[in-house]
Amino acid sequence: MPVQERRESVQPFDWAKQWYPLAYVEDLDVKVPHPLELLSQRLAKGRRTLVPAHGIAAGTAVLAPQQGQGFFAAGEQEQIKSEQPFDWAKQWYPLGFLEDLDPKVPHPVELLSQRLVLWCDGQGQWRCFQDKCPHRLAPLSEGRIEPSDGTLMCSYHGWRFDGEGKCTDIPQSLDAKANASACANPRSCAISHPTQVLQGKVWVYGEGGPRTFIDSAAVQPARAPNLAVGESVREAGGGEALRLVQPYTRDFPYAWDVLAENLLDPSHVNFSHHGIIGDRDKEDSGLTRISPGPEPAAAPSAQDTISMEVETWVRQARKVDKWGVQFIAPCLIQWKFRLPWGNTNTLNFYMIPTAPGKSRFMLDSYTQKEGMPLPVLLILKYFAIPWLPHLRMSNRILDGDTALLHWQGHSVAREAKEEGRTWRQAYFMPTPADRYVAKFRQWLDERAGGGPTPYDPSHPLPPLETSKETILDRWNSHTMHCKACQQGFRIVQAAQIAAAVLGALCMLGLSAVLGQGRPLLSRLPALLGAGAIVCAVAWRLLKSFKQNFIFVDYNHSHQH
Ligand code: FES
Ligand SMILES: [Fe+2]
Image (cartoon, rainbow, N blue to C red; front, top):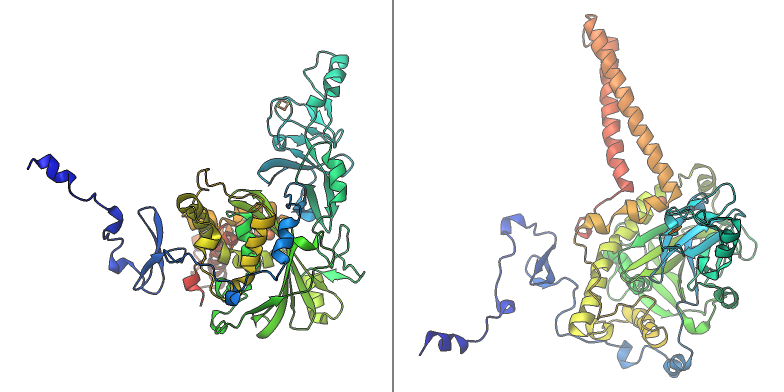
């Protein structure tokens, strides 16, 4: 038989049905899993097993509703389908906390895949335009706010816009008449989105253009139900509300739906956040119980809310306790739990759909002043360092989720693109703990078009980052937007410079006194030497502390 013919009769070589060495045994720490890649699959190498890194066993495409029933009560599902679909663009979203936004400069922001610019006009009103100049589409966020007249000036050719988006000056116009005529043309206007300031945040309507100023007036924002409507934090009933943590903003490398799913999933807390706000050793035998909660007060639409009551181990209280969790579309998830002294602490998580595979997270936390123990009150009022809880708590808690969710979101998109599998087929959720994740996803599918920035399988996959340094980059995702952390960073940097200067002076002094012939162990040289050592140690400690503002690796295997 000719050689050629013999080759064709052989089965094609199957790369997947082969063994590959992935690492030397002596390089692997048996106590932790190691992320690896093989044939475009992300894998986790454990002590004995090699499993798909997202934890979904191949071929187990099962969704298991609670005890054989649907996730919705009888009739509820039908009701959802009969409603008008939820329109993500015709909604209000908070884009920044007032205290973090510098009114002297324009701020680039993203919302629903649109690039926008947020800025404060000469009358002190926050405005939002699409981030493209009507002249030749240069970004207005690179512009400047002119102190002389409070207009936003495009940095490319100097066109100026008032708060409503009207062009007020075109420097290249040949004379005043030509200028007035060009400025009167509607095509010279920037596209403006409605804005409002509410509960300490600047809110922006999802659509822009003149009509939206009428439409948006009839749409109620998803504001926190128990806070007064206004600029400062105050209880709706008039009592004083205190913030336990400064407002916190972070941009995440994963989609809005992945973020919302995470915040509606209390059973992850004791594992993802073990040692910080959770305790993995306490979560056993279905400890976390979830049941339907009361309907949220002041929600724009009862159809677009999810409410649950959770009973689980609460690390801070050191006991099993109840939480309330509520989702109010399009952007608020509220958690309420009791503090050790009995007051309720409320966490308002705002989720902003910025673009596919990306989201912005804003956290506002408050509790009632009444009933608060005096020492806690005094610490909060007079001794609290606003940026310290961001470093020690908020950043650390969110780091615990961020890498998991970035890779989870990518796996979900990949399943959809390459296998055509939806969450129903890709997730295996056999316990009641996932009931509200399923309920939320069902709401998204049936009423809200799959989400505000759904992944389109015909598009390329969202970028997959493998470097934790990029995924957990604190500087770009948080510090640069946070006034408190910027201040903290400057203080630490100044202290580091002071330690370096003092240390250098001590060394100079030491060499001078030694030059005069004084013995090293006499009083002054010893003092100067000790001073130099203390300054060097302080400089080194401050240098590593500064890293808290930039990047800190998070490894679940090292959380004991
Ligand atoms: S692009 Fe803005 S002024 Fe020319
Ligand atoms: Fe901060």
